[in-house]
Length: 232
Image: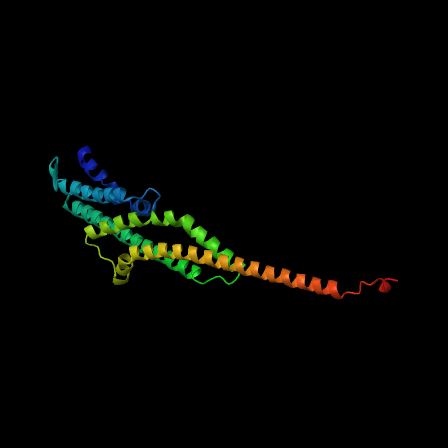
């Protein structure tokens, strides 16, 4: 049997073998509520440290009259650690791509929904409610930008490149965000103008109705058969 020290060298790297557990952890590290650039960097450093520890394990161990050759196990453990680290980086890359696509889609969808000018009070209310909802969620959406930029920078530091279309989304992200804010400000003014126009038209129509009603009253009063002989 192996000595305790020899066994502990391999037991310390047990997570490398726990495939199901590691997949779950990778997902939590990247997509979990507590995910941050610091925790992600910590995970990457953990992989590096674990691989360094594996490399420091003695290749051969004398046990009584037998010399145990650890090189196949050592090589395999190192290989698995590198594979898991690469998988982690692939998950991180896909997470960044998903975030880029989702944020761009939210900006595009919001603009497409708000751009048509309301033609009646019902459409104006729908536009105003949508605008207010987007204003309420604006800070939540903005808070996703900086963590995404940090994660993308981490990919850069490991020489991991995005595809051409994904890189385009990255390069246009902040400009799209600025355009989005300008769009919200423009829509607010537009809806205020439309509301004022509706109020003006409503007031004008009401005044015309009252004037027309008044004229009819005058005509009726002047021409109606109110003489006493018609009452007898």
